[in-house]
Amino acid sequence: MKIKLFPNKNSDSLFIADILKSELKSNGFEIVDENPDLAVAIGGDGSFLHMVAENDFNTDINYIGVNNGTLGFLQEIKPTELSSFIDNLKHDKYRIEKVSFENIKVVTKDEVYYFKCLNEAVVRDMNLSTVYLDVTINNTYLEKFVGDGLLIATQVGSTAYNKNLGAAIIYDGIHSLQLTPIAPINNNVYHTIINSILIPQNRKIKLTPSNRTTDILLLVDGVNHSFRNVLYVEIENSTDLLNCIRMNDYDYTNIINDKFLH
Image (cartoon, rainbow, N blue to C red; front, side, top):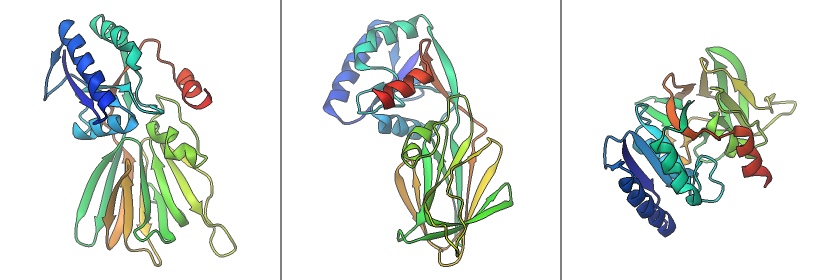
């Protein structure tokens, strides 16, 4: 098995990477700089997101993370578990979980832009003013959203910014999108849905700027992109799925309990 490590720049993560590299080599694994079978992020959740993006969401690669951050929801392996992790790899004591991600298209008057997203996308007014967006699902009109913004989360991203907005945690294995309002305005002038909406995998969300909104700020997994004269933004679940390695004792209920209740 060919393995590539993706540590963040933290000195502790680099130290863990050196230990892991040495142990992997001594157990017969090949450490490579390109075309890996397995990519290993070392750090926090940001390291995992960066790793997947650096590999351009390659679905031929298996992904896993070693947690050297704070919450580390995406990072399954603890630094104290490196030996058992390597042993499990050696003896195929793991399973592959299929994980969905978002495809995003931004259409402006002059150009079309494409992005991929593992956690969430956030659409706001470029100047952080109130944003006005006509929302359709599979070309069927839903609402005119008025408020600070809209967040579109994957199952993976449901435990991140989405959760902090009071929206639902989605169990692993459910390939849905979650449309979550950010400070929606609802009064006798504007009627906006204030709840999060779960959207099945095969539906497309379209956001069309209206009224005073023309310029959009788009956050893709925390990275800002600004666009002027936006005609619309489309977001849907990819039909391709990432391969994430889970140890055989991985249980999502335990993960939720461990990360949020202890």
